Length: 254
Image (cartoon, rainbow, N blue to C red):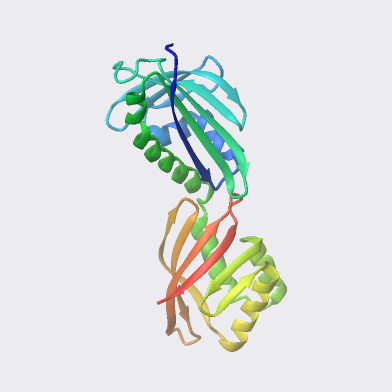
């Protein structure tokens, strides 16, 4: 291998635990879900990795180092030999715990600056795809969690309401809308109880499918009275944490 004197560095925070993120570098099905059908990896020192991009471009490499849930290093080169011959560049991916989940730091080392520059936008794109792929797996049940949130607004018993919400939200949950500035689970439980006293028989319902991007979920809602008539509607923005629980909710009224 030539001297790799030029490097490309990227970092991104992913809302999932390091051990969860690391599975996407060790499981061929997840690896292929990221890169494209036919991609595979044997995640051990001396193992092989293969990437087949959707346009048919093929990349191969050798796995150099694996530290479980922390680090993987592999060579990277194109089957065609251009712009990088097989084995002629090196990728290091390092994972560190972060308050919001995992910080992924990537370094791709090259022999030539011009070839490095060709890959800058590619890694921006690929790591965005990767972050969404991980988030979609971690938050596969996000629609059900959002429905549980809306249903909790109709639970009359305070203890039952607290138990229902504790399965969905973090203890430090934050909730804000035009009528609310709430911090903490106990305050949220009391706030919902107050809302029920002022708006008896009102229930919250999700309208349409959720929209999800990297741990942020949008869910449209309607407030429905006891007579079945729609009283209000809007959109909630749910921010999910690395453990799949809701960290914050912001409500927008239409």
